[in-house]
Length: 322
Image 1 (cartoon, one colour):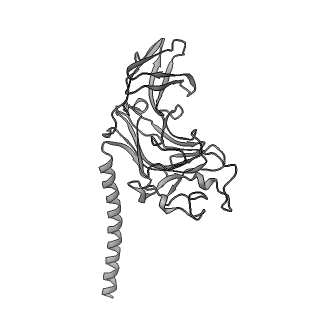
Image 2: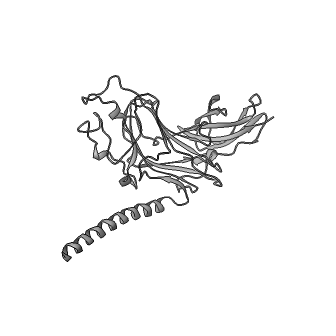
């Protein structure tokens, strides 16, 4: 009897130790990867109840929490079974991750591809994140995806500081081509300071549009006030964006920027309710440049300026006053 009791005690102790070790390993890994963390989500408890999942197609094509690979006629050997070789290799993948299985959603109950395929328009939105007293806010996350079938496919991160005005950033890995997979566990990093800095309510929205196949997996989403060695504030891939001046203003704004090479630059202005009210594109030579935009006819309010260079979006805000 004593031997049986002793054996049970060992098994219970081993199980508790194993659980403790796994949790400690994940926490240590997070601490090592993300210093100066403001907020993070590793989906250890699934998708938070306070988050919002939206499918604008009306087909219930939604983001889900998963511990297994994607399903579907194109990417799985057996169409209705997860492909274990396609699991995102993120640091805390053992906790699970979020996935949009667009290939699965375009496979019918007989394992046949739906024709014509249905393009995705699915979003997942965080609850409010407090970035008060943070003058620098960097968003990073791990992703793994494959898209089909046109260059117009969109994987986007939208950022808002009020829940209804959104600024869009391209979430795709630079250089990744259509129909070919991204790097598994590519770490995306986006400077969202111009929208999120010193804001008590910051929202993130991950959205896939147009692409009908194959999958998008995301894990270990982090907001931090520290830049990695790969980027510096408002400087990504040698494109440097300065502060808008004057700000506030009553007649015009000036946007200083620097290009390391000649490039097409897109300028857009969105009003306080998120409507596009100004757009312009021009080819700009390398070096220090500036763009002047007349805004004297705009009503008073807070406006978002978006600049796109090489499919990367940079955002700034300015105020119009009389």
